[in-house]
Length: 184
Image (tube, rainbow, N blue to C red; front, side, top):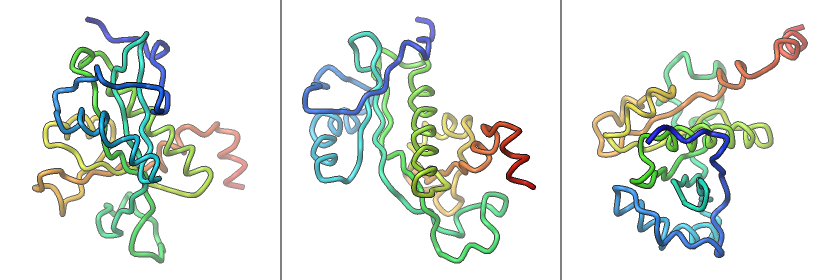
């Protein structure tokens, strides 16, 4: 099957009215989280889960929560000169899964880009510079292709921690006129 056009995909918050019983990724752990734990974690204000839907199917989901990133975990080019704290604020992609029927159709990329957009929006309101993820080893390439870097300290762990510095993304998205105003 060809890639699903992004304009046909919809992101919606997980609610009690949506039953994810038919969602089936290749990971039993990710399936079970969505079906048994995601709503409870939302009610306890631990995380927020968003479903990616196409037509009447749940094609994937992402769960976001807050995180911190150790100062020394960030490369020099991604760090902030003169930063006074030991940790940077971050938004964490706690879970990201695609239904097996929709793999390799652009759903994972759409969910990731939507998550980055949500993190940027959050950073406009409360300040947050990084997005983190504890990647499954088989997903490292996916995240690296989208600009994430491995935290060297965790490279050989079961779920290597990765981060994306949102600052260059935000700068790239700014209209040239607003950047000129800022610089003067």
